[in-house]
Image 1 (tube, rainbow, N blue to C red):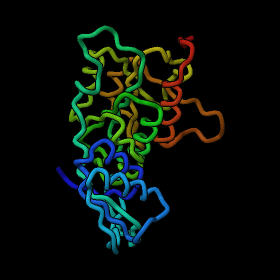
Image 2 (cartoon, rainbow, N blue to C red):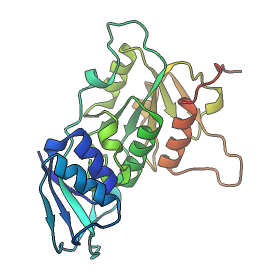
Image 3 (cartoon, rainbow, N blue to C red):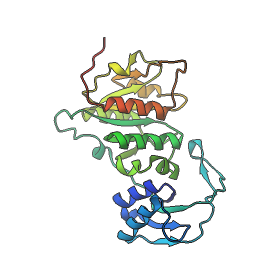
Length: 259
């Protein structure tokens, strides 16, 4: 399992709480208490018997770019943790048991070739906040689960079950077999999100930052919806749009039907 270096103390603390065996070392640049969230990390690491090393840290030397690339940053890190990557889960662990009765209302997320790790991390963080049941991502043409994703997610990667699949089309078929309804998203859709029945188990599909959902993905959707602009700006960043949609679809309320 590959090692990654995490700089967000909330992400590190979540890893210690959920996967202590995966956290190999904590490195802190200053001596004594830092007066920050890293103090909580150090305390948790000591309880879990994870090595804590104090002293000067090397410059990070990298910062994640769109699509998983890197560029030199040259900043001095305050602290970091070396952690094994999360291996993810299988679809059988994420989707409801297909042999059971119709699953209760809930929300799952599918990411169709998102390439910006900041967007992926932000969606994980929002999903963890609103109690999303699971996230499915594509393996190819997608941002890898890099340190940037973990840092931006602020613990969401440890909280929300996720699977990385080669074939999203077959994944959507598996979701339907498990009793989920597939809800696509497109700015060109006629149905507004406000008309979507919240009292269903939904798999919400979010498309690529520039191209949106692929045609095959869209053909697998039971419904496709949009966020209707209320002002002069007619589009949103995918992670912002995801936050709005997730909040609406997880909010208790009356059943909505199409006109």
